[in-house]
Length: 477
Ligand code: SF4
Figure 1 (spheres, rainbow, N blue to C red):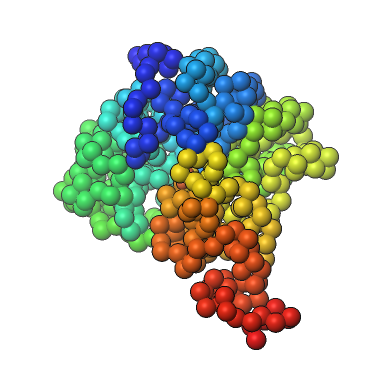
Figure 2: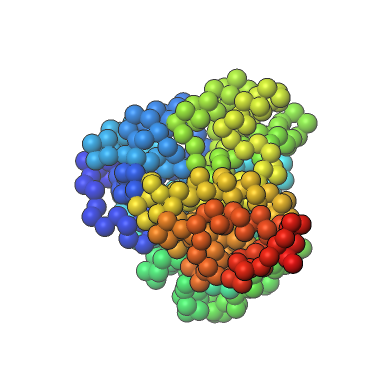
């Protein structure tokens, strides 16, 4: 059993790659220490949500991040307050789950898990079982992620591994590869936790950080480990039926990675890499008597006060818990449908409209909260979102990043701004690490974005457009 969080010393190299800043290992940032809270299955009871808000207010600076793995981060903690914060959260059942540097939360599920009529397996039960076996595997990288997906038609989430239902019956297990995924095995639901444990043990032995970086030999070792585990068990009818068409066997080193983004899954389902299914912002109906209310946090940020107000609203609507969404929002399953007054009040703090352009703009913490940033990314992203509405309606995306690390969105966006020395490098159709077309202050970025509505993003951010005469009609002369 690990020592209580407040007795453990703060490690010395918190900024190293792969760091997972749990309660006992908070990470220094521009606004103090940052501690990540990992609610089991991404679910907070209302009392737990109150405790998180109280902890952020008393022991942090009152600011919270919502992460793409449906966790929360409390910001602005100090050396003096980190121990009482850890004690407060541990007492509420929100403490760290392990002290060996492994993942504090191994699984990711849809925020509707257990309530989604489209699910064809018991996602919460399977996720809990996988969490339990994961704790027995030493040496796992801190960011190891197993997605438990319940929908037959779901897209394959972008984790290390995914456990999903097959249309033909049984549970499929796939692991990420550099250019797609390996469809590794099929098993019965009761076998899945042990099969995943064997997979994780084999992965830990490779000492790699991500499954997608494994060599073909390592993938073969994973496949062998899973199949040996399954063979050691009593044969199940499902596995026997699927054995012949199964993707791998101990004698067969396994198939080549299947290409992303799409692949036929068994009997007709389609697998694509994406985030787990999350409802759109606003109110939707799961069933005639069951509504779901989804609110997104602008740019993945909220405060202790806004969280408290959300808990107040959830309580009034009869929702017993708050679920965290990989879309960086909250999901409520209220007993009564929210009124217009409820939605209006919530819209003061959160994004309610599905077409709100802020949903198409990612932004990291930036300056002054993050020491690596030199630009106020959140303020600039809010200004950019207003002008970006036309592009957002067209399905385009933007990213305002405080530096080339790209914490909020490592991949490409239609427009990526990368902060450097107080201005932004503009990357069109690329990622934060790509070479910018030019460097501009935010005012010039917004001015060019206004032109882009007429001439397009690429032309508006082409270096030669600085000398173009746009005349009075907004079109190039
Ligand atoms: S992208 Fe850079 S500035 Fe933004 S939060 Fe990450 S490290 Fe900080």
